[in-house]
Length: 328
Image (cartoon, rainbow, N blue to C red; front, side, top):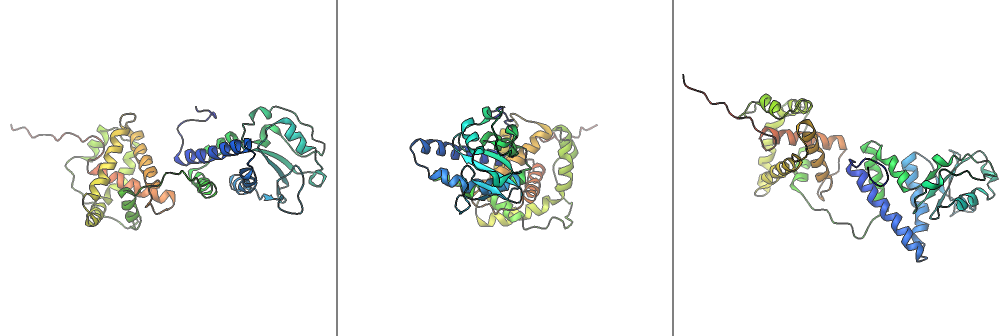
């Protein structure tokens, strides 16, 4: 478990979201101490889009309109929801917001978003609520750890959408530039192939595939290998075309797959190792400057085909010993 109480084994997108939100948190805190409030003001607009994406709200920032109500920053009229965004996380701050003239929002839910401080300690308090807004402190007080705990359990496609939003909204000057990889290049090429067309199953290997599966204890992964091994001849043709663009193009891809396998084999084996290889290669490609973005399921399909091809070529996983014929 890490500092926010969630499993350490998390997706790439969760880690990237955590990094972006942590940077925002720190900047709001540090600049606030210097009385530089540009990030505080930006946070109101940022959290409109962010919370709408996160929870399906339809919030709007009312501070820029004539309808500005003290103590309230964001309103979802259709969802009957009001929300205050604040860098101050105290009971006094929340009760101050609830104590404003909110009679126009009777029957609305009230939520509080702490944008820089952990607000966990506030969820156990009871609060004066003179206008009777719907407010459950244990559920309605948000902070970054609370938000991250929600993101952690989203499907990876939604995590990707959230990260794409954070990347647009929270650009960092110090962000490390992405590098091009031949892995991404070959995946971009493979993505143009129609693998629904029946492929030739003619594939010569110097070993028995079933024996290699048994030797490496690949049970679940065997299903994937069986599905995609028929594409080995087509990948071989793609590599041949790829190598026309320069020396060692296909070798660099296969070496990258092998190095990934060797590193991961120190900690994993069997089916888990196979799926860790696929996961790691997916992340490498997504972090490549020349990656042509595609739906995640398509990317995983293409990577599976590439990894199975490497399996057939014996670049990954142990190869069974060739049995020698013994003369009578």
